[in-house]
Image (cartoon, rainbow, N blue to C red):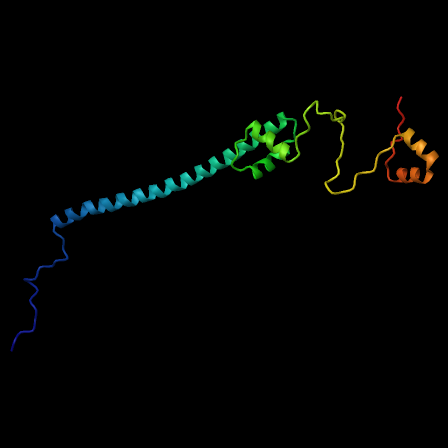
Length: 170
């Protein structure tokens, strides 16, 4: 009868690594470790780059807003229009000429001196929106008295509508 037993004495175990095989895999282990280290460093660098880009965008926006606000102020306009300028002119440089053109285009700039306007210095002269009826004329105390003599009903109507300046001038 044939012997069905297997002789293990002469069998060499391939699972045991020889010193030469372990030396060959050592550089690959080092290479993989170095690769993981570089990937980790790359992720950290990408995160830092994103933070720096975000900071740069915020800083440029703040600088642009302050430049526009200062220019508006130097032109005698409200600094609050800086947001409007930036929203309307996203790509335009915030130069004095661009801001002045913007202010004139949107009616924010006051009329240049010497154009024949009779607006009092420091006074407020409201203008009605386009297409609306003109605001009723304000009457001085003397005008109201003369209107009262001619048409008392119209005089009292103007008084009820608070269109009469009753202050007397000295």
